[in-house]
Amino acid sequence: MTVLDHRHHTGVPGWMPGATAPRTDPAPLLPDPSPVRTFGTPALEKCDPALLRELYRRLVVGRRYNQQATTLTKQGRLAVYPASTGQEACQVAAALVLDEHDWLFPSYRDTLAVVSRGVDPLEALTLLRGSAHTGYDPRASRTAPLCTPLATQAPHAVGLAHAARLRGEPVVALAMLGDGGTSEGDFHEALNFAAVLRAPVVFLVQNNGYAISVPLSAQSAAPSLAHKAVGYGMPGRLVDGNDAPAVHSVLTEAVERARAGEGPTLVEALTYRIDAHTNADDATRYRTEPEVAAWREHDPILLMERALRGLGVLDDGLVRAAAEEAEALAARMRAEFHADPDLDPMSLFAHVFAEPTPQLREQAAQLAAELAAEAEVADQ
Image (cartoon, rainbow, N blue to C red):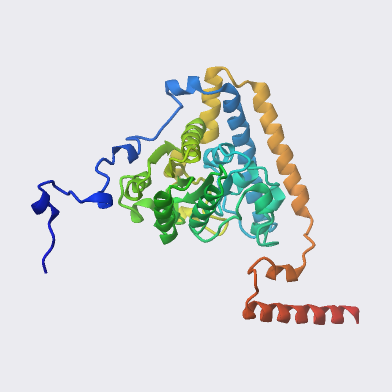
């Protein structure tokens, strides 16, 4: 078999003609040598004080939201809750950088981002309560349903963003994933399509160190997950995921770049999942307490409060107001989840397929018959 050697014919190493020519300089696509930070840098003083206070308020309220949802799970009011405790900076920044007409595509751990987007907390948790397929209207909130299968929301985000661009709408889609999601084929397909189509999408990977119990080192040998962007032809950005102003800044640049028609960006935020994977997980089996303790010292709320007090833009009054708002939210969650929901079991079959399959119709008929029989017995 003869292999055509372009170097022999052209004298130019690696040369290929026309549109097949590869990108020769990957430097503009490579992530920063170290994670982008604002805390402890001159960049912090350039931040808008109002934005810093808003980020702090959302972090405090978000932490209490995570704590209360976890408690509701222990009480049996939620079937499961994947907490984002420790990752709140990524959650609130992702929601805050989007315009009203943009779309958010969350994973199952991103209920705080959904709530920060404006969705009612009760509706955002309905899926995890087992009461409905979604619980909120995706079109009204421009927020896709919480996605339990890993990374399947990423191609959806690309498709929606590309379709919106074809219609001439200035829509940006932001897809949120975990580090485990980057090991899925859907992640590859989404990034490849997004780059080829120059779709207005931002991929935010919250690298919290573990895909359930699997450490990142067992998933990827890349220098960072942000480096994966180069292989698809899009910029990769690496940011301290517990530095809320830095996450907000990097995501803002990525969203603006997408909206300007410059294509997608992959952002890797280095953060940590303080709580277990879910209430069904025992995290002590695969990580040590000293490791968790070290990350607690890098807590996004702790970092934020120290930095803002140092700047003189945060006082005791604002701290107290944020705490009171957080407690009010927690009290509302307790009150609303105390009552059992009034559910229609037949709604289980709604919004599954546009045209129900024969199997789905058979299952619906079987359930309807069982409900009718139960009602008949109750009437006797």
